[in-house]
Length: 172
Image (cartoon, rainbow, N blue to C red; front, side, top):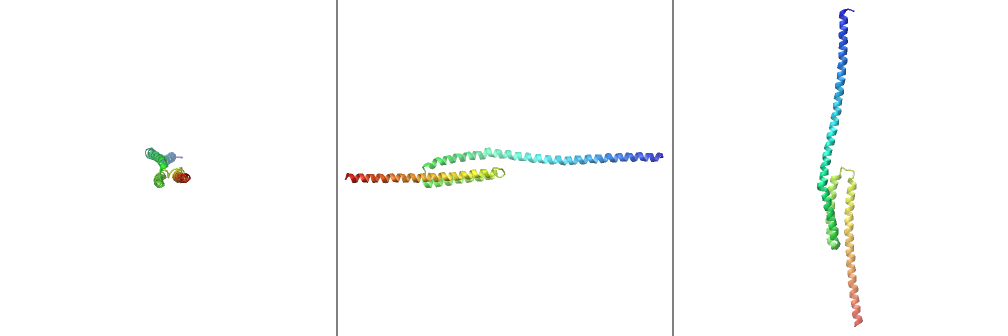
């Protein structure tokens, strides 16, 4: 081979090596780019989860500042309503029942809004429905007790009059 051919082969060999290096660099760049895409996906997921954590923290604050005191107040109101129902007339019992059921409906609506994204949603609403039903039964029981008490007093008065009438009859 002559010198020009040898030199040309050398340069051709260098061009081939440069091409292989270039291809390697391109592979590295493509790998880095796909890695960047993966990093971007992970970053996006992390940011999404951080946002959810902030939302949950805000929800937790709302529960502790609003819902828990509201439920506590409702419990106090229900206990107070139960105590005041003991000596009420039938009409006052029905008005009290309506007020309590209205309060329970408001709380149910509030819990329905709050719990719609959670697994306990249906269970929580069922508990509130049971509370509503229980309060209705409690009012009905007090109403029946009152009716029985009134009937008892009437029976006592009737027997007392009958006894007094018999006593007068025997004395005459």
